Length: 342
Image 1 (cartoon, rainbow, N blue to C red):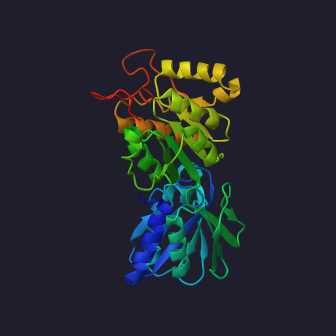
Image 2 (cartoon, helix red, strand yellow):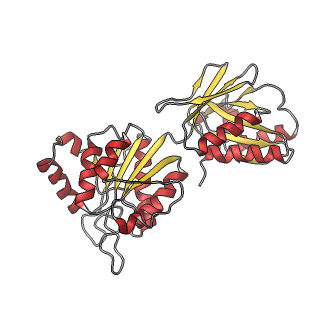
Image 3 (cartoon, rainbow, N blue to C red):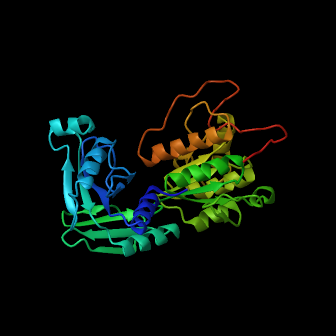
């Protein structure tokens, strides 16, 4: 799977090789309820083909018409949409939203190629554009870097700014990993159990050797890190959670029923050096309650909760008081002959 940035870069390079002109469009600022956040990219071909997006569609339609008319040439240009209520309504911007776009009519092919290569290596990159000249510079970014725009220079951050460490390489992880990669997370997996580690082959999600607690420490979790324990084995999950809950990771979750997670919290309080505040950080059962039963549904519910927490959304929700799907997202998934899938 490719991130949205890589998809846009691929399109620009492919179109250039086919002899087409193209523009790179970036959302630089938004006001009100704009559909796409600052930093969102769109590639626009000279005949109107589009890759990526900057809105819900109406602004793209206007840009396509203007591109076909040959309006975008020379140095980068700043374009605003939705400045007035009438214009916001015309372009389908909700709640009077407004957005400013930087349009680069002919982005430098060499810098696009270099950025694409570095993103495929998993590097976090900064791309700076001088509006007056169109000159582009690339350098390595740091976690926590954000888009910067002063009217003359636009600096955007590209690459896997969010990381996910999955403890357990079972079937749920096989769905969770590619879903998270699609959302631009850099995914790593740890599972010392030979039966699972030997068969792990999910592209883009490397298997890290070692015991989970050691791997969590070596991973150096930061506020852009999520850690999810999926093994159902307390000897593995609890040790990983011990280190994860003491870290700055923005999300720490564990699979299992409400009863199992209540017991886990009690173990963490009684037998490990964790405060009540640290134990309270545990999302267990992991995942939003969506009535999930199958591995892909459980993976979806977990990633939905991770995304909600990442975006600062209150992920609390009522859960059924009882029933066979005690906790739909966190209940252990079992198949015939399988009592502990990861």
